Image 1 (tube, rainbow, N blue to C red):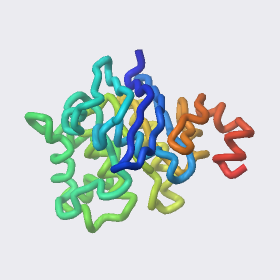
Image 2: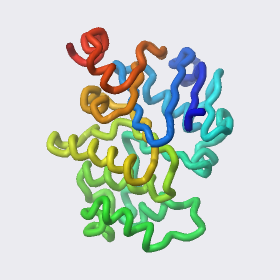
Image 3: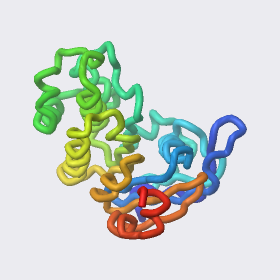
Length: 235
């Protein structure tokens, strides 16, 4: 059984159905990327999995338990965290306070928890008393990831991790995600517009288009597919 299993997920907003029966799996210690054109339903799928919007039909199973109808905070308690593309830090709080907020389900936050973050992102230790709003976009993205990792999740959902980053920081961000997978045993499901780079570090990938599954395979298979390349990777 996969760590995450989504079957025939139908969801959307208001009266607009965006997802029309999407399937998706994530195994333990995998990086899985969802790619596709704008409006394909990628972020909607992430939100439906995490309980931020309702699944109108279908099911989501996490670590063997049905979480289809759980609120997002209950999903977090079970070991899944979500890093949205925007508004993913508390701007008026310091770095350290943001990390404490990330660990809100813990009864106690220890210095060891912070030390794990400092070792992965030394810049955050240097800025630990600085307000998040005064940090660069790349530093805020590091903080958002670190806040989510404070509870040592089994699965991390990341929406557009490279969005807004300077070109020289994009490779570093994907390298960090690989490190997180390798060093913490946390599986990662991400949505990413930089499809070629994301697939190059992914174990598997899914292509969504018009709210439906179009292709799936290993990251390498999708990169080598002429049809995927022509339709979704810019040739």
